Image (tube, rainbow, N blue to C red; front, side, top):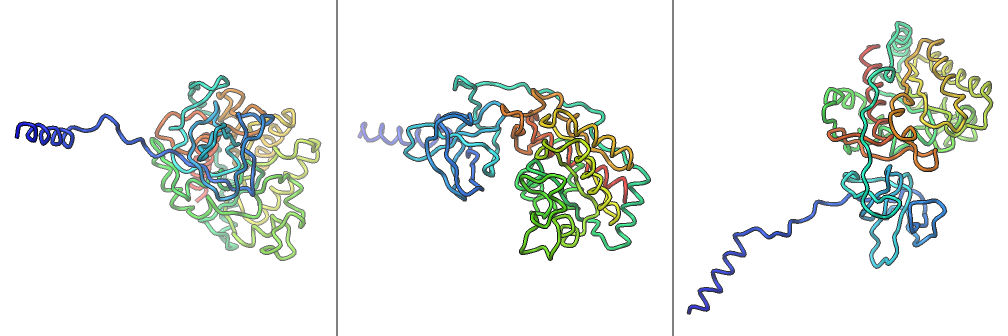
Length: 350
């Protein structure tokens, strides 16, 4: 009887006292969005390949590199590390919860500096208001905006989290009104944002979607399909071989096309210097000359190490759009300041 009583007491204690083993929070996951890639043994482009993964496959993320440009995946049965560039997939969950691995493979920390407070967001001129009002008169959609750009403007990275719900505004709750108003444009797969686009691509029918565009170039097709009232214009990363004169000529063609159709262009600088610093001054000059909004993204990331670029000085460092915690990655600042720019332009022209 004594032994039975002790057994019952032990069972009751086990039920009442919480276990010291607390269930771990769900890990962020990575889903491949390209056809297939090799994972690598370390977060370096020249590292040996380890495994093959394929489109739509989803894996838990177990680590990320400094800068969050690479993630390490958990593959069942794998005896080697499996790293992949983050732009090859979409991330669900909080990537910031994944531990950081430095060059030595041990946990590392990254600085989380604060951004500049001036010269990033656009001022709104009477010229911009006139363009916007003209657009409304000819039937542009006041609740629609378009993205015109290269790899730094594509879904699922640029602004798309504000449609998918993968964001937390934190102290920026006033931006929710803008998210609600422009819902549907953030994650939309438009005709004018593609990997490899440059200023010339937008006017070439060879780059247009043959299923959606009726003998049109991408810019014409986008305007007909979406009828935006505002458009982000962020070009130059994939056109570094262009001369300065050719780049400026192409940018003028884009700006002229938009203004003629009552679309307010938001011109953007870029973080990289692949063009040896030639294009950003042209963008700033054109914004002043045309008196249209300038979103100076370069100024938004100049406080980050290497302007928020990865080891290749090309890809932006990744971070989810969670603004209720310290913001440290270039993609976080890109999506936040772009949303702020859209908010400023919309409230300034309406």
